[in-house]
Length: 174
Image (cartoon, rainbow, N blue to C red; front, side):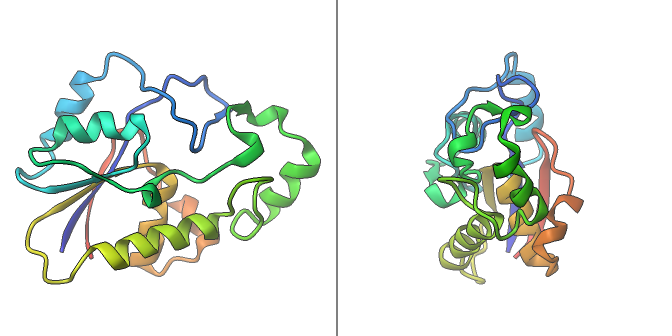
């Protein structure tokens, strides 16, 4: 099954801000970026999206059929760290997470394995192997890295080996 993994375009957040599941907008102008992305997507693809505006705005632009949003496609929940500058996160909270981001949960948030498990649940339960229609998933870097770890059997601790730029389109087979 042909799947196109699309990361949202750049957000309005300043560099260094942890925004995770915060519903932040995208940087303008973005229509040219949307057109470039749309040109890489097959017509009549089934489009799934994170419900966050930075994804749904792009998904609705590129889709020719109704977009299906799913909360399992949201970025990692950074809990108490949402909308904080990474440099302002208390060292006592940050250090354990940096030492094992795969398993250590952010205070009032998720670990990477939590994100991975919900993304794999989405992929496993939403897609049938016999689906002929191409699928597009408009989501976030963490979600896309989770999918790439799953299909490549890559250990989660190595997820950041997968570079996922804003507005990137990655075609995979599921």
